[in-house]
Length: 554
Image (cartoon, rainbow, N blue to C red; front, top):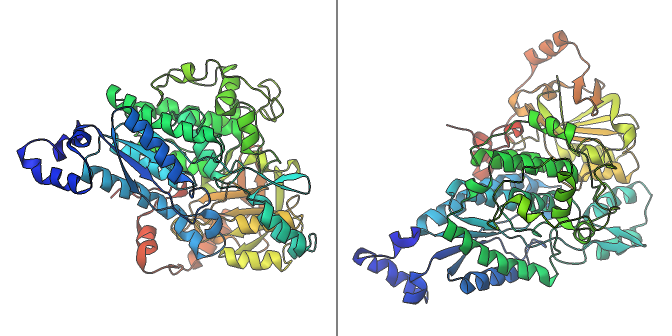
């Protein structure tokens, strides 16, 4: 066992004494030591229930002959961090989480690991750690929140953010906003739409690092506790067979994830995280593959924010396995990839079927013949930009309009709520990238305000920052190179015409090369927004969004 280096032989008597100081018996010490990594805390609604998942995992490990040992990681709630300096820290915690797990696992010589995340950066951070360590590992998440009900409609957190814009524009009463506040998030769990957390939990299932059901079983269902127990059992099987994360998350498994990503219409953040995960898997992908996959994978689901359908509806319709079974009708998946069940993808989905074709469209009758995410390129984004195509209104798939330029999210929000943005405008928010932010903030507040004010049919937003999975509309993020790295987005001026063609993958600033060269000559470098602490170090280390915003190679 890997753990023998901390427990076998005369020289390890001091180590054993410390295990015994923690209350472990010789019998427990002699069994495989299974690290149970939890991001439970009392601030993230998707994580307050993870203590129950931990207990389920521990029981599963104990039933199967292992000794579970729990240790924590940090976690940030993107919703609570939204719209202020807290959002600068969200993406940056992904690397901290991966690094801290590496430290703990190496220092204590665990035989295997069970990862218990649920929200946003915590999921990819844990998967990155699993791949880096490459010891038997499995992910079991906390599960999605149930949707709220408001005036006979299903609602979620994205509804709340849009409602702020509606109140500011006089389209909604403050009393209704207060009522909605009470009803939008009725249970614990990751926010109820196909936002970033649920996107990544679903994709963990597709990658094979999590058991079937991980993406869609609601947080408050007893089935989620049973899943945790099965995960505890499964890790012992993976240990026995020595099936490791890099055996599971291969190039083909990543392609499977991208395929299902397109079918589901996942958060644009999934591109950022899958790129980072592929880097740790030693099977790096580039943005070109996104459009390649999108061109042949139909969009089968429209979940919130693209509709009023939520994850619980996807669960009832058959879950991720049902989506995969539908995709398999056109041979769009590699069925031979091994998974955390110890079986192949093909074996896992063998008996799966769609139970509600109003939630998961028939492969022959999709929402669109192309996938839910698109990568755009042009002189405004030489290395690419990302948009959630499935959440863009048809009238905005092609758009041309004058730029309104802002150097921070705060400036943009003030202008939007101050009604300085008019129909046809293209809002540009820059110096919010991984380096310039630093931390690549999510622009949910400005996009939600635009939608809530009824401008999403005529106004686009472009940024070198990123978007929440709850964002909808013509919201184009991850513009690379970012402004802080001298990308052309730094050269845009108020009134410049920007051309957006999502259908053909183009994003262009309609300004001559000669004029851009003149502007670059007088472009002044911008002082770092943060000059001390963790974010200052992060800004110096982080790479472009086009490469997953991972740390640069030194």
